Length: 507
Image (cartoon, rainbow, N blue to C red; front, side, top):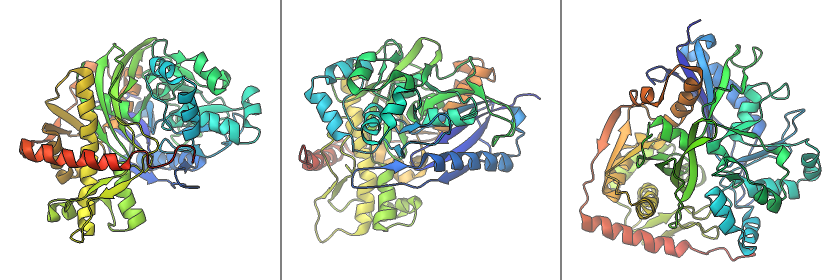
């Protein structure tokens, strides 16, 4: 049967979707399922890996039914994922030894602080491009090995596998306990704090320091891999044998989906967090300004395209907090008319440092704050301030990116669920002072992973084929004066300063 489509599982922080794309990069009808957020204690965030796999199977089946696609018409399947979220499981049964520890979780603070105190951070930064922070997978693996009874012994005997969510999904998609492929790609490997950016392989010095057995780690492969990792079994949710051969961390997936293949091209993704990536080509660019150096993607073994990244922990999750914890909105879409009605934040700033501050501050001891409160302020102003916090955190990252790259951005490509909010996108353009460009396909993360699978199986021949698919939906032009922009940002930086070092070290 002729191959007409490429598809991808997009396993995100709050839910999972399965999407099928035509050769023109057009999405067919798709489905999405949320999963439970587990908070065992303040600062800890977990997911149930088996629930995630169950939801993955459901969205695959539902999307096939909704789209009417014959699975045999799909050329290949990719995976894109919430990065850094860590699972350790039994390869014989597929049962996790512990819940997935989510990238937002701060339980590894003491492990990260000891790494700093022991003088290991300069080596980690040089080797991996990352800083010592609770964000990354390596310290999470160590926590599981040190705190879950019997797991270290099993890992040393080869009876435990580690994976970020991409590895977990690929393993199950290709058969799980029945011969599932244990692999990751350059982009996800670079988010573990364990992969050397130059060699594109695991760094033994860091593994030894953290006490992580190498045999529990997946094989590191290109993001688009003609060496097919495995096939979906006929007994699985797709009901056919389809190659699984594409993998990208969600933010790198968006960079590819936005076809930002040129040096200096940038995108910003608005999801649970916010993530801005700037393509630096084959050059590994270190950051003195609080950004991360990361692998962007690889389409050839042993070769990689790199990026500078500004990672923001809480953006869309702050909207979720308004909905679920404070219950002042019923859904995210309400934020647009509410914010538009009040027109400003009533003089307050909201810094949602629930998991500390990520780029460019990297303060794991910071915590959230609302400052500037007066009796004038209503809940509607907090909604507006929450949207502003997304935009101001993005400006923090953009300023750092300018310093490191020397590139003055004239436009920012945007994607992710929140870009549907026209008021937010206009606010972003006003606060940044640059044009904000929204593409016709908003779910570019899933599109990027589909592109990797389609490239590996010949549905597309090269990256230029992908560029031809990209189109503009709307351009938001800045309307604020320079004075208004400067005054607003001055207040934001004062607010951020109030959140710093809130948690006492060692407490």
